[in-house]
Length: 438
Image 1 (cartoon, rainbow, N blue to C red):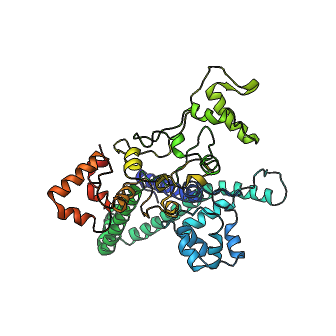
Image 2 (spheres, rainbow, N blue to C red):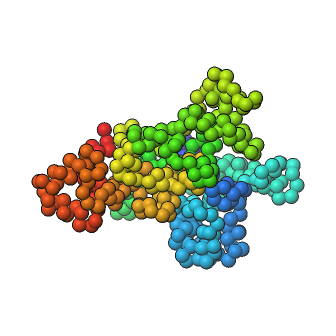
Image 3 (cartoon, rainbow, N blue to C red):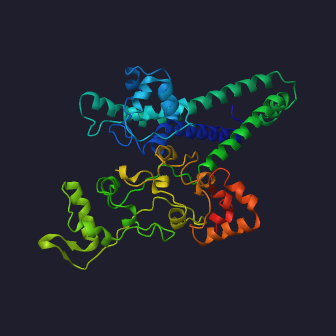
């Protein structure tokens, strides 16, 4: 069957390729869950979104329509409009779910299969009942990769064996003295014989690779729902919501600088020298501020002079070649913080990049469609946002000069700008590349 070393090497290469492919496929559920779902969902505990353990059974028991759950994952708004049970689920929390239109039914099933295989917290291998059964199922899933490898080896051996037998039969019927055809010659004959079919197949394959490449490129730099860890848990809902602290008290450079600024420890101590927390969790977090400030609340409070820096992790990170000024947008453009950062008075968890679907639910926000922090998102806002409904003499020197030039040199263009009752950013050059890029 194997007449040359090349045949053995080809068989080994094909075996390893198929084994690695099938092993990777078996891990898709875990990879998809961690990349698409883990930001908001956990298997056994409610978070930003509800727990996902046995959610398919829950939807079925609740009377959901067939296929409604998968439609919910792709676009919850469509599912809620077509299925009463999905509409009921949509009332579970005020936070809207992100859209995942690219996930197929196979992807979604793989995610739920992975979630359902996760053991209950605290379950051990020797625990009785369902906990022990789940531990066994997870162990079986971890061994599944070796099963795929074994099946791939068997599959390749069968193909090569059948091919070898066929070649032996062809060689027996060949005229005496005629050299048998090599594998390469047979493949060339088959390709030429079915050249149209092969050509269409190659074209489809190439187009598929190109489309997949562009889809990957489109996702570069898209950080929707990005939420890094922070050294101190800061609930904006308590500070800005319950206590009504103005954003500019902590982010005091937002109207004067490119950066909004991060509050210093001294700003925190203005309040927390007296506010020491009621619960154990509050006391733990506030103690981190005391440590950074070198402060001890004992005996009326004393400073030791031994301070430490608090290293915050940046949430809204733009590329180095992108220029963005908070002062320009807040002081001149009149943009409310909620337009880009969401309603921080209700933000209980750590700061994050809020998906555009959630931003659109906030009253007064400009309705946008592109993912948050992408170039399309900025351009779309520049097209929709009006900075003035008439004369721009109260917007600062730059806009006063534009207003003056339009009135003096091209009054018809100025009248065209205010036909819709507003002068937008794009009409004043807000789409020029140099406005945002160095």
